[in-house]
Image 1: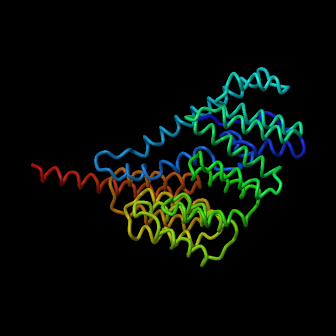
Image 2: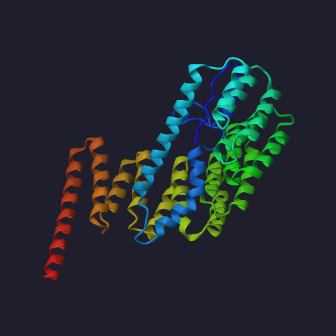
Image 3: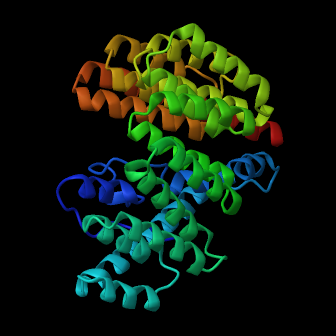
Length: 372
């Protein structure tokens, strides 16, 4: 899947359009405000249910490490394609409509090229022609190139958000058309991202209300609503009501992930006491989930309260868990203390880790004797 990038950044309103017209590539996300959800998030939303089912399949579970490697390969492939497209465009940057026409004939299925053509016309003040190019792109791109078509639909929505009159009606018209041809969840997420980026908070809130009804079994959608509510500074009671509704709607297999991700959002957006309570609630029922302990520790480390962090590490490293899990926790504890440079505490961690290793060795010896 290709990530189109704008080729021009002229000053004034057209330049703003160029930056918001397209999906930002990985290297630009920090500097270019995203107008919609990234391609990675789109793909994750489709695989959400499949990943959970795969995680639950006995003896056939896809390891998290394997999924991570697959994701890295996919990102690397997308980045390489984007770089190749950008270099190809820069070798002979089109400077006239005729040159762009030649380019779209050469690469008719590339949303990268079509969107750059739209941006070029907008820079010239030819908004109506940019609309015509968007329509041509949607007619021309092969029906099997779903992501390429989605990129153009999103760019078209952004164009109407910037230049449509009346803006809200123009955006909704293109949005409704896009829903007929693309994955509805992806289109909704794209529109939501645009509303959030352009600070149309009322419209974003209304859209999220519709999304949680239409996609009520999607963990991703409920988390987006919680994140939006936290960023808007909504009351704790309001957010709790959303969480309760989500738990009633989500399948059982998604609830732990939903609760842990909600806790992370609460830490991130200024209500750590709520996030802390939520992690404690989860770990009370799943005390041996070292992945949850690790994420909980990461949130506390980010806040930086040393006493709280050490107390949590002590609790985690007193658990009775498999050897590999305990090694992971002790390694994290040692790494944290090593960064702080307190030799006394580092020695304490090492002693505790040694005692844990001895207990595993003793248990192994007893097991072997029992087998003889």
